[in-house]
Length: 262
Image 1: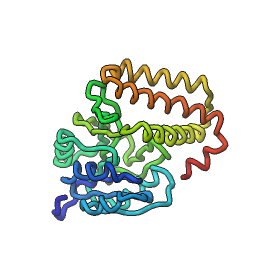
Image 2: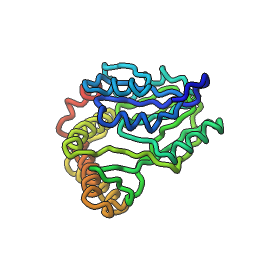
Image 3: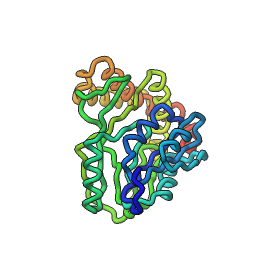
Image 4: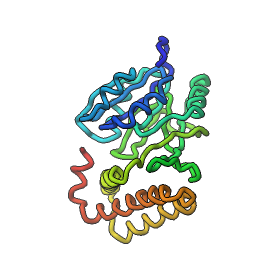
């Protein structure tokens, strides 16, 4: 990482048992002035690996949701700008160049980035890019994050322009079937908890409709069918998450409040 006195860019990473991916993630961001890792209590070598690569690591094992972990990360940020990077992502050279251009511009906005999904060892390059997630901000404009999952930034001033990077993030979200099943359970439960707090209702039919719509959107309109078996599996797991989100909302509703706080 650069060692100049001016901290123009902080890259923030949330981790929990990410020893398989954290090294590649940090190396893709090694050109940043500051890399901050907020760890949620890893039991593997995540913290050791991150520290060995020069990242500034802070431990917060008392899990209170993704938004709270991002808020904790903000307190350690010293950069003029902050870019949030997930441990299963890597910054491509094209995206790194665009980020540097933003730093030189001094603009205040919200920057969104899209993913190239990597599923079961295969980059799904023939599939339409997914994402459109807000990842870069001028630090002074970010007040806090709200939400347990798919958290949102609260900015000041409000109504900042949203700009879009052309470069992509490599997203290694589906490496094994077993890992995909674990992620399916976690994100279905978190998504159901979020909808429960909004007063929404669930059920099998609503879940089937949501799953069918998401599978059609990704596999047909998103060209997942061009990516072979790996494309099919990726689209299927996303659709299953949509289904179980509404099934949990209907049948496991009483357990959702406690889960959201973990």
